[in-house]
Length: 58
Length: 348
Image 1 (cartoon, each protein chain N blue to C red):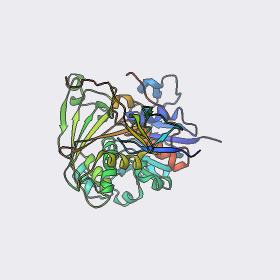
Image 2: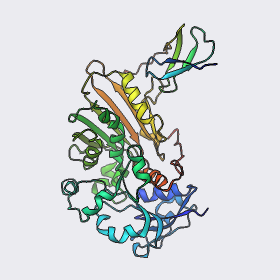
Image 3: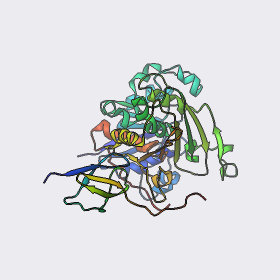
Image 4: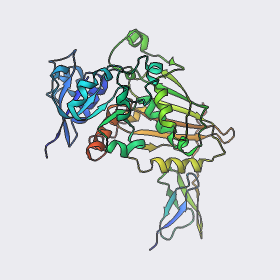
Protein backbone atom coordinates (compact mmCIF):
# COMPACT_ATOMS: atom_id res chain seq x y z
CA UNK A 1 0.00 0.00 0.00
CA UNK A 2 1.32 3.44 -0.88
CA UNK A 3 1.92 5.67 2.12
CA UNK A 4 -0.27 8.74 2.18
CA UNK A 5 0.84 12.15 3.44
CA UNK A 6 -0.80 15.48 4.07
CA UNK A 7 0.89 18.81 4.83
CA UNK A 8 0.94 20.02 8.41
CA UNK A 9 -0.94 23.35 8.53
CA UNK A 10 1.49 24.66 11.14
CA UNK A 11 5.00 23.72 10.00
CA UNK A 12 4.44 22.37 6.49
CA UNK A 13 6.01 18.99 7.24
CA UNK A 14 4.60 15.93 5.49
CA UNK A 15 2.42 14.12 8.03
CA UNK A 16 1.86 10.38 7.44
CA UNK A 17 -1.84 9.59 7.23
CA UNK A 18 -2.88 6.06 8.24
CA UNK A 19 -4.93 3.92 5.84
CA UNK A 20 -8.63 4.62 5.77
CA UNK A 21 -8.66 7.80 7.80
CA UNK A 22 -11.96 9.04 9.18
CA UNK A 23 -13.19 12.57 9.71
CA UNK A 24 -12.14 14.06 13.07
CA UNK A 25 -9.38 11.49 13.50
CA UNK A 26 -6.52 12.91 15.55
CA UNK A 27 -2.91 12.82 14.40
CA UNK A 28 0.25 14.41 15.77
CA UNK A 29 2.84 16.10 13.56
CA UNK A 30 6.26 14.61 14.31
CA UNK A 31 7.99 17.82 13.32
CA UNK A 32 6.17 20.41 15.44
CA UNK A 33 4.26 18.08 17.81
CA UNK A 34 0.99 19.89 17.17
CA UNK A 35 -2.17 17.80 17.51
CA UNK A 36 -4.02 17.70 14.18
CA UNK A 37 -7.47 16.67 13.10
CA UNK A 38 -8.61 15.18 9.81
CA UNK A 39 -11.01 17.76 8.37
CA UNK A 40 -11.51 16.36 4.86
CA UNK A 41 -10.88 13.00 3.20
CA UNK A 42 -10.47 13.35 -0.52
CA UNK A 43 -7.88 14.71 -0.48
CA UNK A 44 -7.00 14.47 3.19
CA UNK A 45 -6.88 17.90 4.81
CA UNK A 46 -5.46 18.43 8.27
CA UNK A 47 -6.10 21.30 10.62
CA UNK A 48 -5.11 22.04 14.17
CA UNK A 49 -7.15 20.05 16.66
CA UNK A 50 -9.09 22.14 19.18
CA UNK A 51 -7.07 22.76 22.33
CA UNK A 52 -8.09 23.51 25.84
CA UNK A 53 -7.19 27.14 26.30
CA UNK A 54 -4.85 28.24 29.07
CA UNK A 55 -4.50 31.69 30.48
CA UNK A 56 -0.85 32.68 30.32
CA UNK A 57 -1.55 36.35 30.71
CA UNK A 58 -1.15 36.83 34.42
CA UNK B 1 40.47 -2.74 20.41
CA UNK B 2 42.58 -0.58 22.72
CA UNK B 3 41.07 2.70 23.77
CA UNK B 4 42.64 5.95 22.60
CA UNK B 5 44.73 7.69 25.23
CA UNK B 6 43.53 11.19 25.99
CA UNK B 7 45.22 14.01 27.90
CA UNK B 8 43.61 17.13 29.37
CA UNK B 9 45.67 20.24 30.04
CA UNK B 10 44.07 22.48 32.62
CA UNK B 11 41.80 19.73 33.92
CA UNK B 12 40.88 21.34 37.24
CA UNK B 13 38.62 23.89 35.57
CA UNK B 14 34.97 23.33 34.84
CA UNK B 15 35.32 22.24 31.21
CA UNK B 16 38.21 19.97 32.24
CA UNK B 17 35.94 18.39 34.85
CA UNK B 18 33.21 17.89 32.28
CA UNK B 19 35.67 16.21 29.92
CA UNK B 20 36.69 13.86 32.72
CA UNK B 21 33.03 13.05 33.39
CA UNK B 22 32.13 12.49 29.73
CA UNK B 23 35.12 10.24 29.06
CA UNK B 24 34.17 7.97 31.98
CA UNK B 25 31.48 6.56 29.66
CA UNK B 26 33.22 6.88 26.31
CA UNK B 27 33.49 3.49 24.62
CA UNK B 28 36.56 4.31 22.53
CA UNK B 29 38.81 6.52 24.65
CA UNK B 30 40.01 7.09 28.19
CA UNK B 31 41.72 9.95 29.96
CA UNK B 32 45.21 8.94 31.04
CA UNK B 33 46.58 12.28 32.18
CA UNK B 34 45.00 15.44 33.55
CA UNK B 35 47.18 18.41 34.36
CA UNK B 36 46.78 21.12 36.95
CA UNK B 37 49.64 23.18 38.27
CA UNK B 38 47.72 24.12 41.39
CA UNK B 39 46.33 20.67 42.26
CA UNK B 40 49.18 18.43 41.05
CA UNK B 41 49.33 15.21 43.05
CA UNK B 42 45.72 15.32 44.22
CA UNK B 43 43.02 13.00 42.93
CA UNK B 44 40.67 14.52 40.36
CA UNK B 45 37.75 13.76 42.70
CA UNK B 46 39.10 16.24 45.24
CA UNK B 47 38.35 19.09 42.82
CA UNK B 48 35.46 17.54 40.88
CA UNK B 49 33.43 15.84 43.63
CA UNK B 50 31.05 14.14 41.20
CA UNK B 51 34.05 12.00 40.16
CA UNK B 52 34.82 10.72 43.68
CA UNK B 53 35.12 6.97 43.51
CA UNK B 54 34.64 7.02 39.74
CA UNK B 55 38.14 7.99 38.65
CA UNK B 56 41.47 6.96 40.12
CA UNK B 57 43.31 9.61 38.13
CA UNK B 58 45.39 12.28 39.88
CA UNK B 59 46.36 15.66 38.52
CA UNK B 60 49.91 15.99 37.22
CA UNK B 61 52.04 18.97 36.30
CA UNK B 62 52.10 20.13 32.72
CA UNK B 63 55.83 19.48 32.42
CA UNK B 64 55.11 15.80 33.11
CA UNK B 65 52.80 15.56 30.11
CA UNK B 66 53.55 12.51 27.94
CA UNK B 67 52.65 12.05 24.27
CA UNK B 68 49.12 10.75 23.75
CA UNK B 69 46.58 10.20 21.00
CA UNK B 70 44.48 13.30 21.62
CA UNK B 71 45.00 16.35 23.78
CA UNK B 72 42.31 18.70 25.07
CA UNK B 73 43.56 22.16 26.04
CA UNK B 74 41.46 23.87 28.71
CA UNK B 75 43.71 26.77 29.59
CA UNK B 76 42.48 30.35 30.04
CA UNK B 77 42.28 32.59 26.98
CA UNK B 78 45.70 33.91 26.06
CA UNK B 79 47.66 31.06 27.67
CA UNK B 80 47.35 28.40 24.99
CA UNK B 81 48.87 30.18 22.01
CA UNK B 82 52.19 31.02 23.77
CA UNK B 83 52.47 27.36 24.82
CA UNK B 84 51.55 25.99 21.39
CA UNK B 85 55.08 25.00 20.42
CA UNK B 86 55.35 22.67 23.39
CA UNK B 87 51.76 21.40 23.44
CA UNK B 88 50.77 20.82 19.82
CA UNK B 89 53.35 18.09 19.07
CA UNK B 90 52.24 16.10 22.12
CA UNK B 91 49.30 14.42 20.38
CA UNK B 92 48.06 13.30 17.02
CA UNK B 93 45.02 15.51 17.40
CA UNK B 94 44.52 18.62 19.50
CA UNK B 95 41.30 20.32 20.60
CA UNK B 96 41.61 23.75 22.15
CA UNK B 97 38.71 24.99 24.28
CA UNK B 98 40.11 28.50 24.69
CA UNK B 99 39.55 31.33 22.23
CA UNK B 100 43.19 31.43 21.15
CA UNK B 101 42.65 29.84 17.75
CA UNK B 102 38.98 30.53 17.03
CA UNK B 103 39.45 33.73 15.04
CA UNK B 104 41.02 33.59 11.62
CA UNK B 105 42.03 37.25 11.55
CA UNK B 106 45.03 37.96 13.83
CA UNK B 107 44.05 41.64 13.94
CA UNK B 108 40.89 40.65 15.80
CA UNK B 109 42.81 39.50 18.88
CA UNK B 110 44.04 42.89 20.11
CA UNK B 111 40.55 44.31 19.60
CA UNK B 112 38.53 41.55 21.28
CA UNK B 113 41.00 39.85 23.63
CA UNK B 114 43.51 42.56 24.36
CA UNK B 115 46.63 40.79 23.16
CA UNK B 116 48.57 40.51 19.95
CA UNK B 117 48.50 36.93 18.74
CA UNK B 118 51.89 35.26 19.26
CA UNK B 119 51.28 32.55 16.65
CA UNK B 120 49.25 33.99 13.78
CA UNK B 121 50.80 31.35 11.53
CA UNK B 122 48.67 28.72 13.30
CA UNK B 123 45.28 30.42 12.99
CA UNK B 124 44.54 28.97 9.56
CA UNK B 125 45.38 25.45 10.71
CA UNK B 126 42.59 25.17 13.28
CA UNK B 127 39.05 24.33 12.20
CA UNK B 128 36.33 26.19 14.05
CA UNK B 129 34.62 23.63 16.24
CA UNK B 130 30.90 23.62 15.58
CA UNK B 131 30.14 20.28 13.88
CA UNK B 132 26.79 21.45 12.53
CA UNK B 133 28.68 23.99 10.39
CA UNK B 134 32.02 22.34 9.69
CA UNK B 135 31.51 18.59 10.04
CA UNK B 136 33.56 17.52 7.02
CA UNK B 137 36.46 19.86 7.82
CA UNK B 138 36.53 18.63 11.42
CA UNK B 139 36.63 15.01 10.26
CA UNK B 140 39.83 15.61 8.35
CA UNK B 141 41.47 18.07 10.71
CA UNK B 142 44.30 17.60 13.20
CA UNK B 143 43.46 20.69 15.26
CA UNK B 144 40.11 22.13 16.28
CA UNK B 145 39.32 25.38 18.07
CA UNK B 146 36.15 24.52 19.97
CA UNK B 147 33.56 27.32 19.76
CA UNK B 148 32.62 29.53 22.69
CA UNK B 149 29.47 28.82 24.67
CA UNK B 150 27.49 31.97 23.87
CA UNK B 151 28.79 31.88 20.33
CA UNK B 152 27.57 28.31 19.82
CA UNK B 153 24.04 29.18 20.89
CA UNK B 154 23.87 32.37 18.84
CA UNK B 155 25.43 30.82 15.76
CA UNK B 156 23.14 27.77 15.82
CA UNK B 157 20.16 30.06 16.33
CA UNK B 158 20.98 32.36 13.44
CA UNK B 159 23.06 30.46 10.89
CA UNK B 160 20.12 29.16 8.81
CA UNK B 161 18.78 32.72 8.50
CA UNK B 162 22.10 34.23 7.46
CA UNK B 163 22.84 31.39 5.06
CA UNK B 164 19.47 31.95 3.38
CA UNK B 165 19.83 35.73 3.29
CA UNK B 166 16.77 36.22 5.48
CA UNK B 167 18.69 37.94 8.26
CA UNK B 168 20.05 41.35 7.27
CA UNK B 169 23.80 41.90 7.24
CA UNK B 170 23.33 44.42 10.08
CA UNK B 171 20.58 45.02 12.59
CA UNK B 172 20.12 41.69 14.37
CA UNK B 173 20.10 42.10 18.16
CA UNK B 174 20.88 39.21 20.50
CA UNK B 175 20.55 39.03 24.27
CA UNK B 176 22.20 36.13 26.10
CA UNK B 177 21.36 35.29 29.70
CA UNK B 178 24.16 33.36 31.30
CA UNK B 179 24.96 31.42 34.46
CA UNK B 180 27.96 31.88 36.71
CA UNK B 181 29.98 28.89 35.46
CA UNK B 182 30.68 30.81 32.26
CA UNK B 183 33.19 32.75 34.29
CA UNK B 184 35.26 29.64 34.93
CA UNK B 185 36.59 28.16 38.15
CA UNK B 186 38.75 31.15 39.06
CA UNK B 187 36.99 33.49 41.44
CA UNK B 188 36.84 37.24 41.73
CA UNK B 189 34.97 39.89 43.67
CA UNK B 190 32.16 39.70 41.13
CA UNK B 191 31.78 35.94 41.68
CA UNK B 192 31.84 36.23 45.47
CA UNK B 193 28.58 34.73 46.72
CA UNK B 194 27.07 37.86 48.29
CA UNK B 195 27.75 39.71 45.06
CA UNK B 196 26.73 37.02 42.58
CA UNK B 197 23.71 35.49 44.34
CA UNK B 198 20.30 36.72 43.16
CA UNK B 199 21.91 38.86 40.48
CA UNK B 200 20.27 40.01 37.28
CA UNK B 201 23.20 41.99 36.02
CA UNK B 202 24.04 43.54 32.68
CA UNK B 203 27.66 42.55 32.64
CA UNK B 204 28.44 43.13 28.96
CA UNK B 205 25.80 45.25 27.22
CA UNK B 206 28.20 45.81 24.34
CA UNK B 207 31.60 44.54 23.32
CA UNK B 208 31.24 40.88 24.36
CA UNK B 209 34.21 39.08 22.86
CA UNK B 210 32.15 36.20 21.50
CA UNK B 211 30.74 38.71 19.05
CA UNK B 212 33.93 38.29 17.01
CA UNK B 213 33.46 34.57 16.37
CA UNK B 214 29.71 35.00 15.88
CA UNK B 215 30.27 37.53 13.12
CA UNK B 216 33.03 35.41 11.62
CA UNK B 217 30.84 32.32 11.36
CA UNK B 218 27.67 34.07 10.24
CA UNK B 219 29.45 35.84 7.38
CA UNK B 220 28.26 33.19 4.93
CA UNK B 221 27.18 35.68 2.26
CA UNK B 222 29.45 38.58 3.19
CA UNK B 223 30.44 40.57 6.27
CA UNK B 224 27.80 40.83 8.98
CA UNK B 225 27.31 42.73 12.20
CA UNK B 226 25.40 41.26 15.14
CA UNK B 227 24.58 43.32 18.21
CA UNK B 228 25.19 41.21 21.31
CA UNK B 229 24.38 41.92 24.95
CA UNK B 230 25.00 39.58 27.87
CA UNK B 231 23.19 39.47 31.19
CA UNK B 232 24.30 37.44 34.22
CA UNK B 233 21.43 35.61 35.90
CA UNK B 234 21.18 33.60 39.11
CA UNK B 235 22.05 30.23 37.62
CA UNK B 236 25.17 28.08 37.67
CA UNK B 237 24.78 26.29 34.33
CA UNK B 238 23.04 27.10 31.14
CA UNK B 239 22.40 29.99 28.83
CA UNK B 240 19.50 31.29 26.82
CA UNK B 241 20.07 33.39 23.72
CA UNK B 242 17.19 35.47 22.37
CA UNK B 243 17.75 36.97 18.92
CA UNK B 244 15.60 39.66 17.36
CA UNK B 245 15.78 39.43 13.58
CA UNK B 246 14.15 41.84 11.16
CA UNK B 247 13.97 39.80 7.94
CA UNK B 248 15.07 41.19 4.62
CA UNK B 249 11.76 40.12 3.06
CA UNK B 250 8.36 38.88 4.11
CA UNK B 251 8.45 35.39 5.61
CA UNK B 252 5.86 33.16 7.23
CA UNK B 253 6.22 30.56 9.95
CA UNK B 254 6.02 27.64 7.57
CA UNK B 255 9.03 28.92 5.65
CA UNK B 256 11.00 29.31 8.87
CA UNK B 257 9.98 25.82 9.92
CA UNK B 258 11.20 24.42 6.59
CA UNK B 259 14.47 26.33 6.89
CA UNK B 260 15.29 25.06 10.38
CA UNK B 261 14.11 21.53 9.61
CA UNK B 262 16.42 21.47 6.59
CA UNK B 263 19.33 22.74 8.70
CA UNK B 264 18.83 20.65 11.82
CA UNK B 265 16.27 17.94 11.11
CA UNK B 266 18.98 15.27 10.96
CA UNK B 267 21.33 16.76 13.55
CA UNK B 268 21.89 14.56 16.61
CA UNK B 269 22.43 17.47 18.98
CA UNK B 270 20.14 20.25 17.77
CA UNK B 271 16.47 20.06 18.64
CA UNK B 272 13.83 22.41 17.26
CA UNK B 273 11.49 23.35 20.10
CA UNK B 274 8.33 25.30 19.42
CA UNK B 275 5.42 23.96 21.37
CA UNK B 276 1.79 24.97 21.40
CA UNK B 277 1.04 23.72 24.90
CA UNK B 278 2.69 22.53 28.09
CA UNK B 279 5.26 24.34 30.22
CA UNK B 280 8.27 23.92 27.94
CA UNK B 281 7.17 25.61 24.73
CA UNK B 282 10.50 27.15 23.85
CA UNK B 283 14.19 26.35 24.43
CA UNK B 284 14.87 25.96 28.14
CA UNK B 285 18.38 25.70 29.59
CA UNK B 286 17.56 23.74 32.73
CA UNK B 287 16.34 20.62 30.96
CA UNK B 288 19.64 20.58 29.07
CA UNK B 289 21.95 20.49 32.09
CA UNK B 290 24.66 17.92 31.46
CA UNK B 291 23.54 17.23 27.89
CA UNK B 292 25.17 18.00 24.57
CA UNK B 293 21.91 19.25 23.10
CA UNK B 294 21.18 22.74 21.84
CA UNK B 295 17.52 23.63 21.58
CA UNK B 296 16.46 26.15 18.95
CA UNK B 297 13.02 27.71 18.65
CA UNK B 298 11.38 30.73 17.11
CA UNK B 299 8.28 32.88 16.99
CA UNK B 300 7.29 35.27 14.24
CA UNK B 301 5.38 38.44 15.05
CA UNK B 302 3.22 38.63 11.96
CA UNK B 303 2.17 42.18 12.75
CA UNK B 304 5.64 43.72 12.92
CA UNK B 305 7.63 41.14 10.97
CA UNK B 306 10.05 40.66 13.87
CA UNK B 307 11.37 37.12 14.07
CA UNK B 308 12.45 36.04 17.55
CA UNK B 309 14.82 33.08 17.61
CA UNK B 310 15.80 31.40 20.87
CA UNK B 311 18.60 28.94 21.60
CA UNK B 312 19.46 27.21 24.87
CA UNK B 313 22.30 24.93 25.90
CA UNK B 314 24.52 23.89 28.79
CA UNK B 315 27.51 26.21 28.49
CA UNK B 316 29.87 23.55 29.88
CA UNK B 317 28.70 20.77 27.56
CA UNK B 318 27.36 21.77 24.13
CA UNK B 319 29.02 25.10 24.84
CA UNK B 320 32.33 23.48 25.84
CA UNK B 321 33.40 19.94 26.75
CA UNK B 322 30.57 18.07 25.04
CA UNK B 323 31.05 19.87 21.76
CA UNK B 324 34.79 19.17 22.07
CA UNK B 325 34.07 15.44 22.43
CA UNK B 326 31.65 15.63 19.50
CA UNK B 327 34.51 17.06 17.43
CA UNK B 328 36.91 14.45 18.83
CA UNK B 329 34.52 11.69 17.73
CA UNK B 330 34.35 13.09 14.22
CA UNK B 331 38.14 13.46 14.01
CA UNK B 332 38.60 9.81 14.93
CA UNK B 333 35.74 8.28 12.98
CA UNK B 334 33.82 7.27 16.10
CA UNK B 335 30.03 7.50 16.32
CA UNK B 336 29.34 11.21 16.73
CA UNK B 337 27.30 10.70 19.89
CA UNK B 338 29.78 8.38 21.65
CA UNK B 339 29.92 9.36 25.32
CA UNK B 340 27.30 12.06 24.79
CA UNK B 341 24.01 10.20 25.12
CA UNK B 342 22.96 11.60 28.50
CA UNK B 343 19.41 12.95 27.99
CA UNK B 344 19.28 15.36 30.91
CA UNK B 345 17.13 15.45 34.05
CA UNK B 346 13.57 16.35 34.85
CA UNK B 347 12.59 17.81 37.19
CA UNK B 348 15.59 19.84 38.22
